[in-house]
Amino acid sequence: MSEAQQALDYVRGNGERYLSELKDFLAIPSISTLSENKGDVQRAAEWVAAQLRSMNMDNVQIMPTAGHPVVYGEWLGAGKSAPTVMIYGHYDVQPVDPMELWTTDPFEAVVRGDYLFARGSSDMKGQVMASLKAVEAIVRTTGLPINIKWLVEGEEEIGSEHLGEFIKNNKKLLASDFCLNPDAGMMGPTKPTITTACAAWHILN
Figure 1: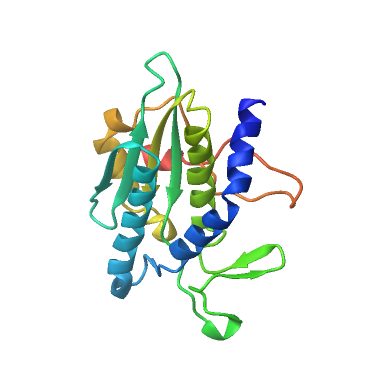
Figure 2 (figure 1 turned 45 degrees about the horizontal axis):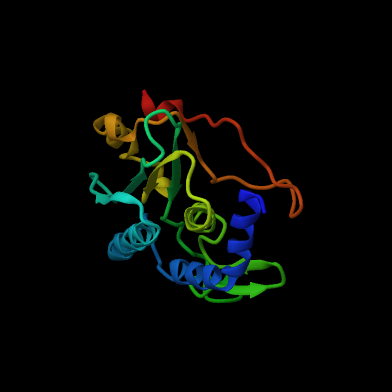
């Protein structure tokens, strides 16, 4: 059996658990624009950190900024000769108004057909979960052939106001060969899509 097949079989065998954990993540109203939800934003950061620890990631930290915190974690066990990928994500979500447009509670995830409806299910808690569980599947089966660093922020929905300063202040910690940002869409349900570049230069300059 190939290494890829082992990881895929692991994912399929744990699908119900993954869905349950995603629903728990989506239930946290981590609305970064509202001051009354600051505690929920912190709680979402702690949820992500706990996930990283459960996957045996190292140096997991909830790192403060002048706004909402950044969650960092790493696994560098592949050694210095192996490439290092930075996986980016965000755990904050947009407000839910106007409420009358929702047919179900925005923070109680509901499956309808092939879709999961909740605030953040596709932007971007769903993608954060997909990234976490893809890596978990490899960790639990064949082991990671590369090094991984995680940067999961809590301010993307308000323009990542403090991310640029955070990156500049932590250049050595965050140094990587390339960055994977799964915060994108797909061409269709049966057409996996890879976005190869983003206009993120303004954050670093």
